[in-house]
Each structure stands twice: as structure tokens, then as C-alpha cells.
Image 1 (cartoon, one colour):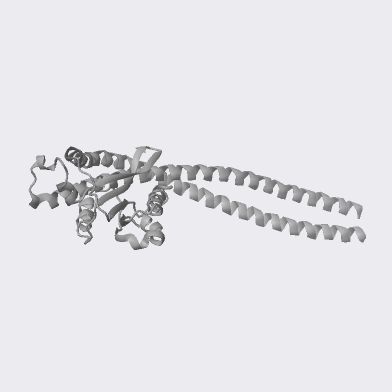
Image 2 (cartoon, one colour):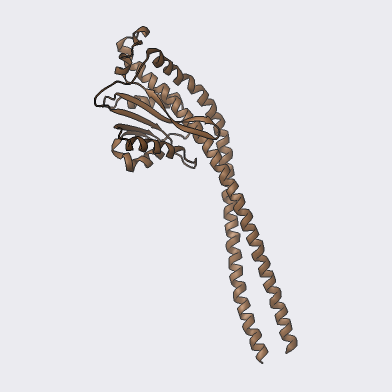
Length: 293
């Protein structure tokens, strides 16, 4: 009777342990399923980003002809920012509305915060919701204008022109205007860069501007057109950087998911083996107890 009592207690303990082990197996299996689904999503996003990167790179190459042509005019005219006692700058930040692309947007926000910490006085025009959300708390008072719906597709000159139309309507007269964007270096690297977009007064005060024989009536149109050219260039380069960073981020995420799947698969196999071993021990113990009876 004593042996039967001992066997019954061992049986109850084994049943409890096996129930816990089965619960653990189900948890591991559920996590494996979730990670596999995540890997499928990140792989798909990587393929989509790779496809978009091809179009973005083509648009970036085309946009450079617009922006660099405007810069050649400024270089030939020797245009420079206006020197004033109270300098007021406008910085146009070119980001987008989408995330999951590494530090593309946060790099631009850090650049702005660094300028603010250095004591610079400037207003902000932010293109894209990502940088707006990041700078709203630290530089919210300086945001004069913002644009959403950017980054859904490859930027076009019409998009840049529409943004430039709104910027030139700002009431403040700025001594200098700068466009902050991500400069595309290669498929794996980029850096925040500045494109100068000068005011009308800066154009008029250029030493060699008179050689272009531009009427004052069309000077404002020329300045707006040059601003749109530079914005198109900046938006196209930033879009290419975003797609490249998203592809790399999704590639890294897929690799990490694969490593996690391997680790959880090993854990699942070991736990399952422990369950089988426990069941064998239980059977042998029960058989031995029966013989002793």
C-alpha cells in the first residue's frame, strides 16, 4: 500500500510538470509562428523598398540637373547671404510621413537641435510628419509652416512647386534660406546636408547678377522657380535615402528574425525532447511499481 501511495504522488507530480511543459511548448510554438509572420512581412517590405529605390534613384538623378543649374547661377553671380545685425534664417527640413527606415529622420532632427543649442535664430518649415513630430517639443515655436502627405510616392517637380508657392507667401523677410535634406552618398550611407536658397535681396546684391540682365519684375518669379528647383532636388535625394535605409532596415530585421527562429526552434526541440523523456520515465516508473505490487 505504501508503494502505491508513493507511485500515486509521483504520478500526480509528473502530470503537473508535464502540463507546465506542454504550456511552455505551446508558448514557444506561438512565438515561432509570430516571428515567422514578422519575417514574411519584413521580407516583403524589403522587396517593395528595393523596387521603389530603383525609381527613386532615377528621379534623384533627374532632379540634380534642376538643382545644380540653379546653383550654377548663384555661383556665377557670386550670391551670398545678406549681412545684417539681426539675422533671421529660414530652414526648410525635408523629411517624410513614413518610418521604419532607420535614422533618416532623426538625423535631420538632431541637426536642427544642434543648431538651436549653438544659439542660432531661425524659423522652420517642415516637410513631412516625422520630423515635425520629433521637433514639435523642442522647436515647436519656430515651426511656421508644415506639409503632410509627403513620401507616399516619388517626389515630382509639381510637389516642389506647390510647396515653394506657400513658402514665398510667409510674411517674414528672411536674410537667408536653407534647405536641410539627406544627401545620398551610396546605397548604405547618407548625411544631412544644406542647399542654399537665397532671398530676392540677396540676388539683387550679388556682385555679378547684373550680367544676367534680369528685370526686377521677374526677379520674384526667378527666385520662386529656383527655390522649387532646389526643393525638388532635396526631396528626390531624401526619398532615395529613405528607400535605401528602409531596404537595409528590413534586411537587418529579416536576418534578426531568422536568428530568433533558429534559437526558438532549438528551444522547442529541447523542450519537446524533455516532454518525451518525462513520459518515458513515467511509464517505466509505473511499470516498475506494478511489478513490485
